[in-house]
Length: 239
Ligand code: IPE
Ligand code: IPE
Ligand code: MG
Image 1 (cartoon, rainbow, N blue to C red):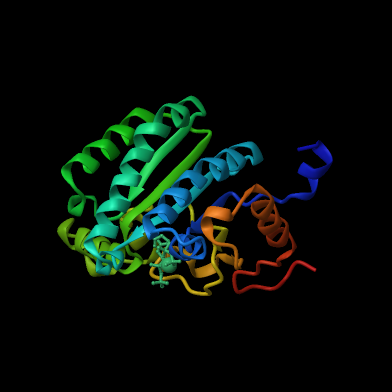
Image 2 (image 1 turned 90 degrees about the horizontal axis):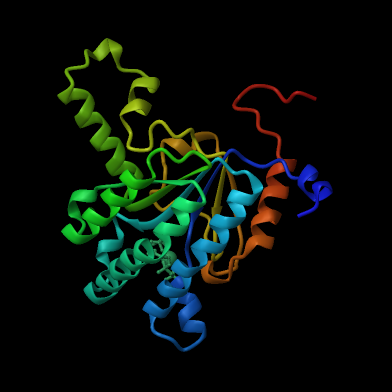
């Protein structure tokens, strides 16, 4: 990218993506749904590299929700295997690119092999600071709030000390700041239980493109549109 192009992009500090549409992508091609999940997972690398190059500080990806267990067991198991292979094949490069990997969601329900891989990847990359990549895997915004409340009670926090800051600090996303821009592919206009607390003042952007086809040009389009938005956080616009 030229410096002129770089200049016009007001890059969000934190981008979160709901990577939706893998199934429809596969169906469109007469392929099994897992082929869509494979293509979708392969697409992560391209978008991640683009984010690194653009100087995005935080990228959060919604890979599997607490509600996705409702899907057929074959699809769930296949998807978990694909995500596990993604760690195997990409970890070295992520680390070389100075990317720090974080996980949010209920890790204890994942297979012990996957739990182990995630913990190893998190530990290997913990000192990297170029881009913080959070993978939401078995994540639900409501479950995360429930877990935060449990943690607050378990720590014996008195009721009068509970405020928004306190709850924020007990969420698994902490200390990553709230997302500035949430992108959802495949044309849906809903959060589907993603970052429900953190998204209070996020900007939204959606595209009919299915996730496996979402590329760097569309990412830049989303960032350009974001740059034109006026964020007010309940106050008054500067102009
Ligand atoms: C997103 O693609 C990946 C997950 C939710 C795990 P989908 O599998 O939801 O794809 P569609 O929405 O059925 O096309
Ligand atoms: C949201 O997509 C979850 C992920 C992308 C991981 P879904 O496909 O599960 O959402 P709904 O069911 O269309 O709301
Ligand atoms: Mg979907």
